[in-house]
Image 1 (cartoon, one colour):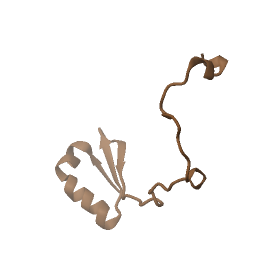
Image 2: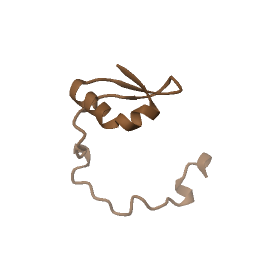
Image 3: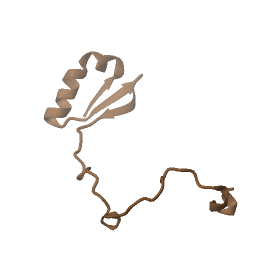
Image 4: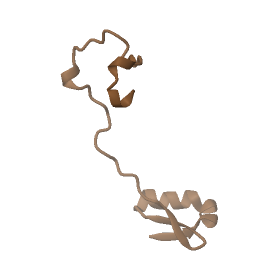
Length: 79
């Protein structure tokens, strides 16, 4: 782990990011000696590609699903 003040980190950002990228180093950015943010290696998440809901395959929208509802369709407590 490397702790560095933000002022210094600005001039060394490329080197710091390379350290994170190549060595998996964790960088702690400090302001007046107090930690305020971390630079950490990016973790690839699970598959972030959205898949269609199988229950909705073949569904047809007969009207605009974004159209506002008339007042009588709202529950009484929300009118």
